[in-house]
Structure formats: structure tokens, C-alpha cells
Image (tube, rainbow, N blue to C red; front, side):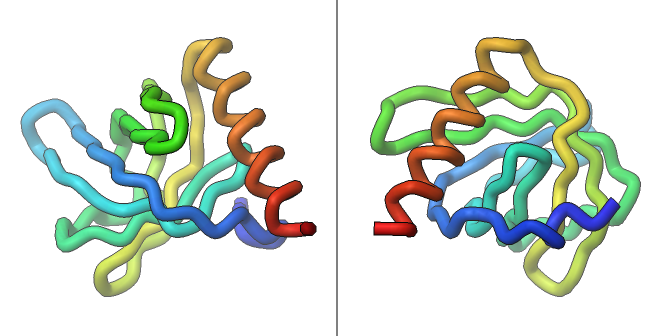
Length: 107
């Protein structure tokens, strides 16, 4: 699945991710869609890794928790995640954030 056939919105949100005790790290989201995101991080995470992801929304003082995200690609210093599972409230908030950012970029 190529999540970036449809351009995401440019953002700069802090994030943290974990896969049990195996991978724990922080990164900066730089691209966001309703289906996934691109994360810049010093932490290497190989494709296929399943993560829990927490997105910090600075202008909302809220968090979006993604229960399951899968690394679909990884390059030096960044990787792409597909969102697989999250609570409906988190998904609704994510959709609102993406829509707001899309509207802001059109103005």
C-alpha cells in the first residue's frame, strides 16, 4: 500500500512509539494522512515492525493514540507508518486534524 500517492499534510508534531520493550523511541511527524504518517527519528525501525504510536497535538493539547501502526518503509532517519487500529474517538480527532490542516494549506 502506497500511503503517499495522496499527499499528506505537512506538520511538525512530536511523537513517541513503542513495540513492547523492543523498540522505544521518539520522533517528529512531518507528513500526515488519514491512513498513516511519515516519522523522522534517530531510531532505526525496520519495515514490518508493529508499533504503538502516540501523536502530540501541540495546538490542541491532546494526544492521539494509535494502538497498532505498521512500518511500511524505512530510509535513513525516517520511516512510514500505516495506521491499522485505533479507537474511534482517536480516529475522528485524526480526521479533523488532517482536514483542518488541508483547509489551512488551501488558504
